[in-house]
Image (cartoon, rainbow, N blue to C red; front, side):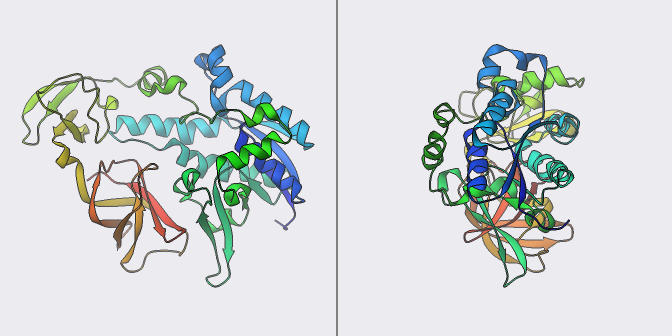
Length: 364
């Protein structure tokens, strides 16, 4: 597609995407606002959820329409329900029944925001798509690659969820919030044209799960049986009964439903035997993991061992490690043991201030 200055902005109805659209128009881009209709079930028609339920709610779509009118840009509401269900919701459900802890936002970024939306953008004659992510995308001429750099707002940096981006996608993506120093600075910009928007709270973690009751969501949206099974100690002895593997995640201590006379932690989920393995806090720490479905951004592939830093979950601190290529997977050896390395979660690699790449933590 021939390069132009038209950009489609994914408008969730929140502060970040609104300011992203505003800034891009201010910078001279030909901006189109698009609200992505992703998910709707009967519970999301609840008045409370419609008011506070984040980017999947009808009220947020109306907020997006209203601010586009205020900014003075065209607005479209487009249906992405089918691709969202297939690539995000179905994946989310399947992962829990496999004893994994999924990352729906990462799947949404990969398949919906930066694949399906990009296709729609091109159909609308736009060269770019843009979002309200806190990250920077730049072209590095010295390596002839597009790179992703951490946001200036350390506490809001969202590069962890962007490791799947490809070079072809990166050249079509704009993220104008990467240079902001804080969320408060973003709110100040919003206050300049929409006071109500500037005070809007951040969206909830999983936009399609009301009240974050993911087990209830699994029950309503899957025909799979949540079967009870055994709690085992590290030696394989039965020490209690669990309520179904979907209720547990690695490192969990609270909510086990059984008391053992001392703190016990989930250290493994054995799906083949429908068992949850419990141990002491020290058993939750590991130094090695295998990562699958790895994508690199700073380079095309990993050819030899490399020392870098990595995060095993969004909220974790970066930890020094060495990554080793082993066929179609990457072995990660941390300098120091990490807590609750969880299958299904993303491990994301950094080289100084740049996103190196990442993958999915593999069971076993």
